[in-house]
Image (cartoon, rainbow, N blue to C red):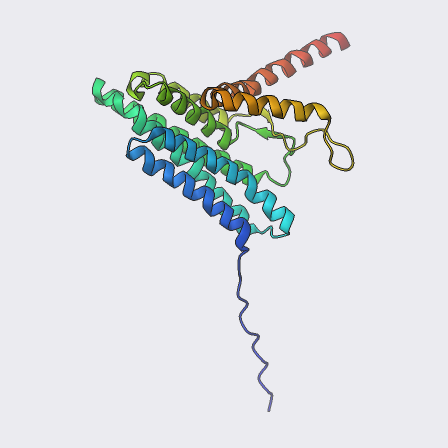
Length: 259
């Protein structure tokens, strides 16, 4: 009589606490931005999205430093990004400014929520494309504007205007353009520098000038945080198309020289 083979106990799949806790903090910041915008606290909403961006930059580094990287963490981070940099900016911009378009007629009202939806959908598409290309893409560059940078453009604009004491309804014809431009740039093929490969020696030390640049940026942020962030991220937004045009022009000149 054959003895029954022992059945191995089921494996309990756990998750790493620390990096996923940081990711949860980023998701909470994005959720809080939505709640704050519903309550009319638009500066708080904008700051919450920036806090989410800081935490989003930390969770991956925490995972690498502690050796706790996992596929679960990658997928969880993407869902957190969709809330913090897709849904949160779209809803903040809608409650702050886009919703005022309905006062000009039903068609204008539809344009307002359509612009917010297009932005959110583009953020989702951007994150899906990034996940599928993570293993083959050049880490020095992003293909398309990264969703945290797109959210930073929108939220620094809200923060700057709200700080000036002006209502968002006065910019209801400007905000759809901002939402559409940032959304479409997320799914574009423009290359953006990722800042993941700053020049450093074999010990990881960067040139002294980078410290000077960091000090200058910190001083500017202290002087006027909202407007400096808006100016900086707007320049970064424009850098992708400008770089692409410059590279195309250089390639045309090289081909003419070769001919």
